[in-house]
Image 1 (cartoon, rainbow, N blue to C red):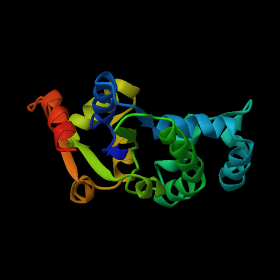
Image 2 (image 1 turned 180 degrees about the vertical axis):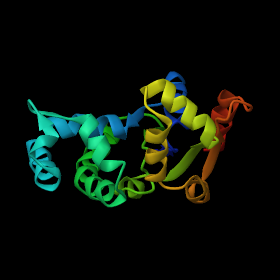
Image 3 (image 1 turned 45 degrees about the horizontal axis):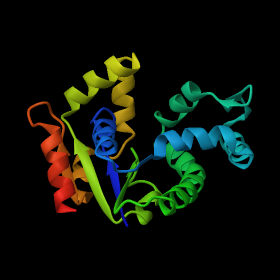
Image 4 (image 1 turned 135 degrees about the horizontal axis):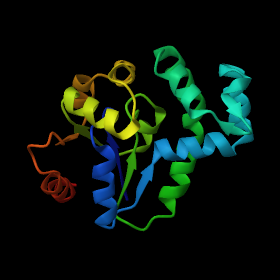
Length: 190
């Protein structure tokens, strides 16, 4: 079984690509979604996060996502610390999940694939790319946030150039190239 990592900057369209892969019958593990779930369910991780970022990070036993995002997207060191704490839990769950799949390919969607230890568990990497102005418009519309907030998040992520350089495959989700044929070609190349 091949494990393929799908990544891209905020608003690039990696979730669209993963939805297409899922529709095509391929299992897709959403690392970001699972990280949020584990942050709320693992007592050990809750303790580690509160020790690192403060008790107010949890309200009524649930992660305060807005506060956590504010902390993480304003400081790369804090983002790195959170990744170091959360991703061992995510990695373990991904490996368990992958072993239960019967497909020749499984995909894992992760915004921080290259920055996290999850990279060590995939065989191939795919970056979904889109111009920054398009990504900003998409995130403003999707998340109802300001342009400044989106730019802060972009500035705390790996640069687009670095992601493109590190990727084995690149899919362009810029509105001028159809994404479905690119996904089909990716599958044929794999």
